[in-house]
Length: 86
Image 1 (tube, rainbow, N blue to C red):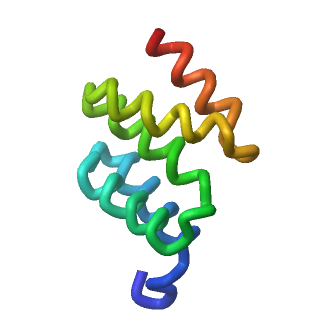
Image 2 (cartoon, rainbow, N blue to C red):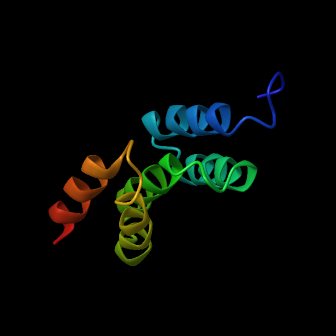
């Protein structure tokens, strides 16, 4: 984080680590930082979606998962997560 504070990928990876330990709010913070650094870095939408789902915040989860469907790197995962909700 201190070495590359302006890297969307680094912020995403830190968020993923927080998710592994069920630190949902910290994960969301880093996924949002990733999105702010590079709004075109679409993987953050999927990760935000499944993290909000982990928090049982379904409307927010679906909102991000719908965005994730348009991302070529996480589209399949986003669709699968959204289908599981429905």
